[in-house]
Structure formats: structure tokens, C-alpha cells
Length: 196
Length: 69
Image (cartoon, rainbow over all chains, first blue to last red; front, side, top):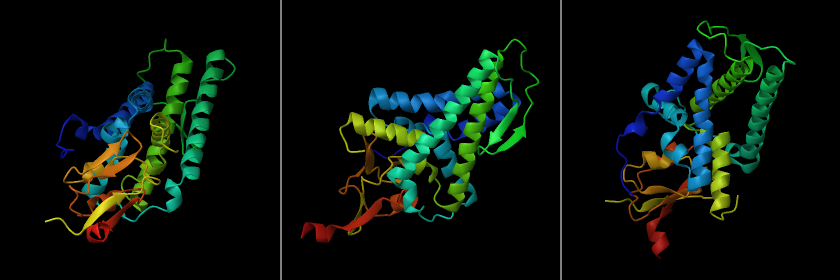
């Protein structure tokens, strides 16, 4: 065990800011968010660890940096149910259902049974028209654009929830029920023969 | 000089986010194979930073003297 020093990873809190800024100028950049989904799963499946959560999660680092800079976190402990198995796995199932609905919508656009919906859905409730993709090359298939809108909405909604719980409780309260965190911890526990 | 208390993680609640390990000034905390945090009580000085940052509130303090007796 050693004391941590500043390195490349300690600047990854900039990643969510860059990601959302790029998506604002061209929604196709939303696909870059797949790194945040695939990398934690690969680390858990191949390495049997949560290296991504522990060292590379830009979102978690951003919440810590915001808290330290602006002191807007209350610092209170989050309600116990946030870290209960029922809530964590329940939220994971909800999140996966929302992700599946994005895939289904993308398929409908791919198969031609639905038109491209150019809006961002915040917190799965509020549709915000979003057609700033002026630089979009016209030869890009509509289904790729549809997935971008859905995935950008998902990333934005989860970040908003993370910011709310960061302000109400401790900086990384989002981590207690983060779907990727729950999933990768479950994978690690299964791989290392630990009870779930 | 370390305090008479040291931090201990409740592995049933820990979400293994690693926030405590980043915060620990002594590097006393390690995430064991992505499952839960393990705190080396021989390195821990009982400063309490990990307890303050832990989002799952799973870190408690134990008394070294009580443990030894």
C-alpha cells in the first residue's frame, strides 16, 4: 500500500465536462460514453477488480472536485437504503430497462418503423428539443443518431441525479447506487467467491 | 502518534467505490479484488477522513486497547 500521488488519472474529472460539451456541439460524440460502460465491465470480467471505479471514474472524481472547490455538499451520510442490496440492484434493473428501451428505439429507427426523434429526455420525463447537430454529415445512418440522443440523455440524467445526491449528502453518494458500480461489484464478488 | 482508534470497514455494506482509499493520507486502504475496502490497522492513524468521505457510511472506528485485551 502506498500514498497516492497526482497522475494522469487524477485529471479524469475533466472527462465528463468534455463529454457533455462535445455532445452539445455534435450529438454523435455521445457514443464516446460507451467507454464508461464497457471499461468497468472489462476490468471486472477480465481482471476481477473495480479499477475503473477506484481510479478512472471521471464522474466520481468530478463530484469530489466540485465539493472541494465549491463546498456545496452537505456532508451528511446518505440514507441507509441507498446502499441496501434491494435498492442498488433495483436501480440497476431500472437502468438496464432504460438502456434496453434506447436499444429498442434505435432498432425501430434502423428498421424504418419509427422516425428519428431529435430530443434529449432528462430524468426519463422531460423532453428537450435538441437539434444543434448542424455539423452532422447527412450520410450518417439515422439509427446511429437515435442511439446518440438516447445514450446522451441517459448519461445526462444519471449525472443530474449524481449532482443532486452530491449536494444533499456526501460527494460520491451516487457511487452507492451507481448501476455500473453495482454490476461490477457483483461480478467481482462472484469471481472471487464472495457472498453478493 | 496514532490515535487509540482505527478505522474498520463493514464489508457487507461497502460498495467498493474507492473514495476512502483516495482520501486516506497514509495509503492504509485497499479495495480487495473489487469487493470491499480493507484497512490496515497498523498503518491507520485514526484520522477519520475515510469515515467522512464514505458515501455508504460503512466505516466505523474500533478501539485498539479493547481489541488487544
